[in-house]
Amino acid sequence: MVEKEIINIGFDSTNIFQPGHLRGNKYRFDILLADLASIFFDPFLHGSLKKFRSISAKAVAKQVVNNSLNSKSGINYFDFKDFDPWR
Image (cartoon, rainbow, N blue to C red; front, side):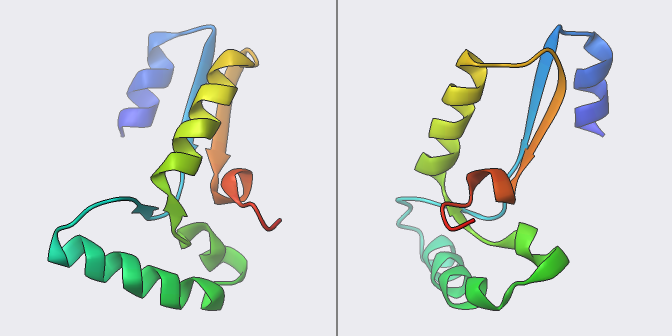
């Protein structure tokens, strides 16, 4: 797994981001269809499925920048709940 290889490099601080489906300004039909489907199904994803909810690419980018500037040492994982504006 790529994450383990990155961890094995031994950086002082490693941030691993694991958001769900990334929504963004894509104009390909298949991606637009996936974005619309995710918006519809997101409210039905509860419990362990909640981590598969979609999130805007812009929200993830902001979180990556914020965490890079205020990074804790060690290995840090961030998943959907760390990006969720409704938590």
